[in-house]
Image 1 (cartoon, helix red, strand yellow):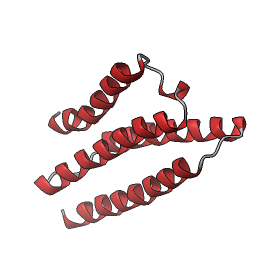
Image 2: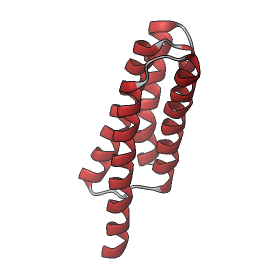
Image 3: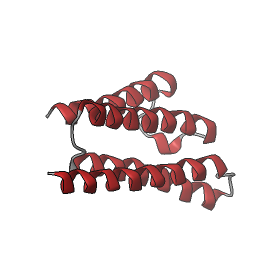
Length: 117
């Protein structure tokens, strides 16, 4: 339960920022730089919470991977929308590639944790 709360904090912070800054709950309607700010707050905060849990000695739970998939799906939806509208998507594509690399690293750490037990 503690891990769930720790992982939920960046989602709440980015949501509060989204409401306070743009008065909306729908991040997909944001323009490019505004969405990138929101997405970076969300991604960096979430990965920061994962590394905090790992540094304390906790394991990465399947719920964490569900959060990761949700965040990744949000980025992919915005990427597809940007491609359909003919907008530049370079920074978002780089963020998504980095997110995939980190997700694969997390999966390898998780499999190493299971082998040690």
